[in-house]
Image 1 (cartoon, rainbow, N blue to C red):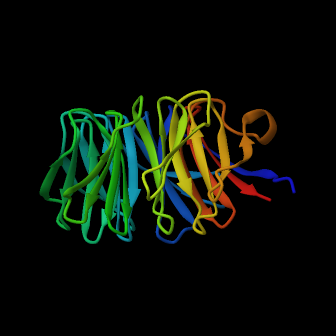
Image 2 (image 1 turned 180 degrees about the vertical axis):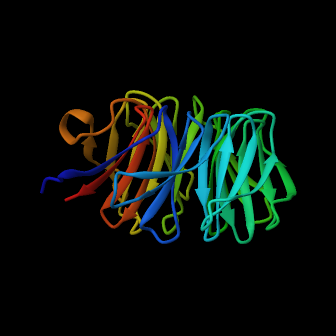
Length: 290
């Protein structure tokens, strides 16, 4: 049975590359950020966005919890906005260079930095702990049941306990690792990066390598049912995979599906069979899998 992909909407308004997107708590809206420094709020049902803030620097990552929207800039600044009023609540300098990812664990905020550290902030957005992992940048953090997994420009995957103690470090990669997700039930890591290879690491530490894209893998995202996942690449494509046997199910591109015309930077599922993506082509797009 063939899989069909239908483009739902184009969300156009950014003036430069869109680097990151994050769903808001009601699941009917999301925020975006990019090279133009814009923080924009969108409804999933409308192509018209609302400008929340204009930073004077590119914004590499954006994330949101129930109460706040967080942005991380190219100059190491973390900004916190109230999700209802859109007002700036706090701005804090966390690194001399870029912040690449922001995730949440209990009442803490974890930030991945250019300097190779994970900064742990408390509920008052004060630095509670600094976890030094590498001399090179940490690009992505994934919260799992047993703790955390992190990847970065050093060709490695770090697995940490809930107390941020190093449990294991996987170092067989050839190049930087930019993207990661985790199959909790199977205890399997899915990751990829600069070499465009999808690396599957199972609970026995056995590794399967799949040449997945032509250029860098920028993001990996499992659906809620953990039956499928998406990969986003610098080669302008999004690919849909079966998470049980890692079979390629569909290639989504501009020619056949109205996809992106430049590097795809981030992807997010917002429904059982719907997702949004953002790109260097200045656009955000939503798709439905039929």
